[in-house]
Amino acid sequence: MTQTTQNAQAETKTTLVIGGTGKTGRKVAERLAGKGLPVHIGSRNADRPFVWEDPATWAGALEGVGAVYITYYPDLGFPGAAEVVGEFSAFAVAHGARRLVLLSGRGEEGARAGEEKMKESGADWTVVRSSWFNQNFNESFFLEPVLAGELALPTGDAVEPFVDTDDIADVAVAALTGDQHIGKTYEVSGPRLLSFQDVATELSKATGREISYIPVSIDDYRAALAEHGQPVEFADLFGLILDGRNAHLVHGVEEALGRKPRDFSDFARDAAAGGVWNV
Image (cartoon, rainbow, N blue to C red; front, top):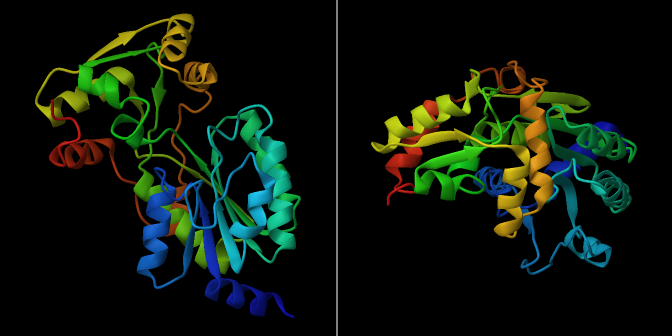
């Protein structure tokens, strides 16, 4: 069987979207379905459930699957994630899923290890290596602080080129459905660098109320995470911002899609219009 024939067959098979109810997976699944392509949502509550911690669920979730969008929760950079992703990738290829698209994180050594483990599977792979999401401010980690009007975070004056999950989803879908993306790593960011003070200013404009930014220490933030039942390892991810390793723009959206990425101000305007930050 030729590579072209294999890829054509993969396009007509189901795509497993791991984390298909999450920030990027939900949008990937919607876009694939909009193209008339069959999708299976990889989640604990699916009719054929997928659970990272339970390999016994993997075969059922992969039934009839030719491609997989891989996201790892809570983060690909966390200890042990690379080994699990590598084990799953090899299992997926052995069960007929040739096309693997992995969501990774910029500047994370652990995530890079996960990328390499995925590549060892022999898949037709693509890596989407992402900056921090715009949607962290309206869907997860930072939603409650925005509602409270106070971003108390251990980021100092550091900057980050926040990227929109719509752009990530568009790149991922292109990679899942187009042969020209095989073997490529796309580093994706937004179009400008923003400090968290800049973010607070943008959110204040969008919501019409004052959103303050208050720098705190890593230890204080770690304690706050523990108090709210969140993994304290999330605090370590702020080191990726503080040391400046990601304090530059990358151009994976343009490389994959031939267009500019979405700006944070556009995200904030649309999110505010949807009422998510109403108090």
